Each structure stands twice: as structure tokens, then as C-alpha cells.
Length: 255
Ligand code: HEM
Image 1 (cartoon, rainbow, N blue to C red):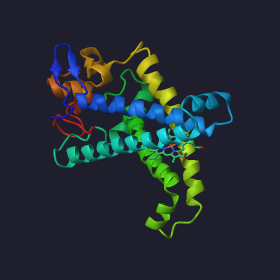
Image 2 (cartoon, helix red, strand yellow; image 1 turned 60 degrees about the horizontal axis):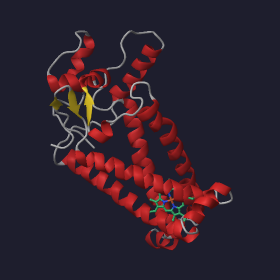
Image 3 (cartoon, protein in one colour; image 1 turned 180 degrees about the horizontal axis):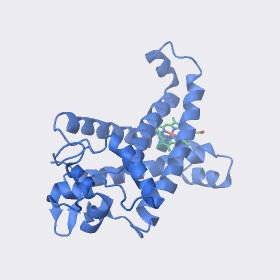
């Protein structure tokens, strides 16, 4: 079954090879899109001119951006289709779906950070911060695809939906360019911090390369999943009641 975390010595399997390839493919296409897109946005700057000239000129930069945009579109579509198929047909556990516990976990962690309680939130396969980032990527990705295709094929958009106002084109440009900057900042500040510079993983969180994490990290970061997979109880207070997680006992997950 896809994405099942299996006990493997002192390590737990977290990502299957397909998920690992998917992540690296997304990372590479995102970097190419940022380099070729942001250099067009700031074309007046010396660094942007340097990038564009080294890509062989503005026409090449635009061709690379659009072609990579198609790869990004294909990756996003395959992710959404695979995830939907897994959830609906294969009955994967909806581990990326936001639920009420994510909100109470965020409040519990705030209380913990302020010293009001002794115990941090007990999270399952994905915690609320990971879900927030995941949905930001999915929703932001769909927005980039829709606005990118609108910029690429402006007349086709009006053939498809004739009643759209003309302002949709400058609006698509504003959304595309600003969401690009937002995505870049979120990746550089949030994602790179969490996966490289955070004291808990420094110098690198290798989980997305090896597909596995240590038992210590499982217990620390995903105690509910650890309890579900091992049948072991980590603590005896009221929190242990949640050991089977809000989605039931089926081991499996959304992508
Ligand atoms: C996360 C992914 C993406 C990022 C970060 C990104 C970034 C950018 C940026 C910064 C610009 C310049 C906007 C400006 O001049 O103000 C741009 C332009 C453009 N982007 Fe993207 N983009 C992404 C995905 C896509 C996709 C998926 C497509 C199409 C399928 C696309 C198609 C375009 C087009 C057509 C332009 C106008 C420039 C041109 O004619 O080539 N982009 N992009």
C-alpha cells in the first residue's frame, strides 16, 4: 500500500520511492520556474539580465519557462488524480485533510511554548504546520497553472468562457507574479528553515531522500502514528485516548 510507514529496525518508512521522485521533480521544476520567471519580472536588474543572457536571451527564457510550466502542470495533475484515486478507491487514510484536531493542536502547542502546559500537541502522520504548507503548495500551484495558462493563451480563455471581463488578463498577471514571490518567500524562509536550519534536523532533514525517519523522531514528531503502528502506548494520560487518530486505524495515507 502506498505511503504506509513500516517499522524497519530503529527507523520507520515515511515516503515511498514514488513520493521521493515526485518531491525532487517538483523541487527542480519550481527552481527552473523561479529562475526563468523572476528574471523576467526584474528584467531591469543587472542580475536578471545576466541570467537571461546566459539562457540565450529572452525568447529562450520564455520557452524554458513555458515548457517547465507544462511539466509542473503534469506533476500537479498527476498528484491530484493519484491522491483522489487513493482516497476514494483505495481508501487511504486522509492524513493530509485538515480537521478540528489541527486547530486544537495549534492552540495546545502555543500553550506549551508559553509554558502554560507541560505537554506539546500529540500529532499524527502530518502535523498542522505540514498540512498548512502542503495545502499552500497545492492551492498556490493550481493558481499558478490557471494564471500561467491565461497569460499564455489569452484569447483561448475568452473562447472557453466568453462572458469573462477583459480585466481577467491583467488580474492573471498580477496574481501570477505576486503568488510567485509569495511562493518563493515561503519556500526560502519556511520550508528551507524547517528542512535544513531547524535545530531538530540540522544540517539536513534526509527523510525526503532516504524515505525514512528515526524512531526518536517518530516518537517526538508523530507520537499518534507511532502508537498506531506499534500498538505501544507512549503515555497514560487522557491524550493516549487519541492513539488511533481521528481518521481510524487504517494504515495508509493521502500523498
Ligand atoms: C510555481 C511556479 C511558477 C512560478 C514561480 C512562476 C513565475 C513567474 C514569474 C515571476 C513571471 C513573470 C511575471 C512578470 O513579468 O511580472 C512569470 C511569467 C509567466 N509565466 Fe510563470 N511561474 C510559474 C508557473 C507557471 C506555469 C505553470 C505556467 C504555464 C503553464 C506559467 C506561464 C507563464 C507565462 C506565459 C508568463 C508570461 C511570460 C511569458 O510570456 O513567458 N508559469 N512566471
